[in-house]
Length: 323
Ligand code: SF4
Image (cartoon, rainbow, N blue to C red; front, side, top):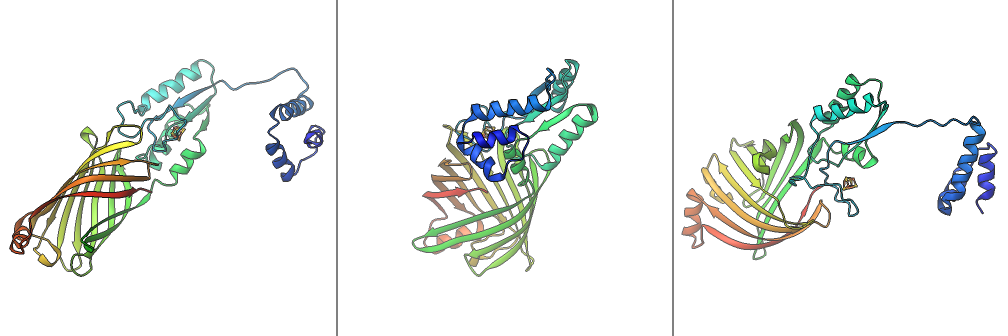
């Protein structure tokens, strides 16, 4: 069936795109291989073949893709995760060159915290030390991941109780790396409940603190002159490949008291949570959990005066989406 197409190629004629598709669909690798060998022998009848001497260097095994077939990757924060120090990586290239190698095949996991500059510096370092080495670097999934490094972060929080919305908030943040593991964030926050809508400008940092805590620290300033700050810390405890237990702590400060919004000047509210999530994919993870909330200051007094508790523990369920 495909032989007439292969004969055409072996004779030096161009094949069409449709014929190419037909070859792929045939899955007849042996016949295609024989034809390719015949073309090679026609173009290069001399009995000489050349090979690249190259070395595979995997600069990191940390990967956020979680491909089921892959035994190489380690999740971010996994104790066996590694990133080759630059001097180690350059030493591997030097060893290759000294053994007569002329090419580096360089691939790694899709590290969620590396910005484009990290890869640019990596390539510049190799090129400046070993200009003679051919770099065969990065797989299509890595290149796709690079397109996501300057990202827009969307944070949203909401709380529904007895059919009414007690808290709803949306943050849109431009995110840019300023140090390894750390981003600066800037953008806007809109509060929809409680009280009337309110808009804030937001500035802060987010990243991986010592002991592998994820930390977010954000300051907010409203057009009415109000100020606020929030710190959030969480930690991922891997129970299984996709099952993660996450302790989390959040504290909120406000510059002014505004009881219509449940805000007290000073330390106003806090939340300690324990969530268990199952990552269908890293981006999509349903969870269940226990959340303990506590109010302080005028806000707590107002809540008690209304006959309610200033702290509360509830069972929560939801879905975590990350893009
Ligand atoms: S993207 Fe590559 S390193 Fe990451 S899990 Fe998939 S195959 Fe493994």
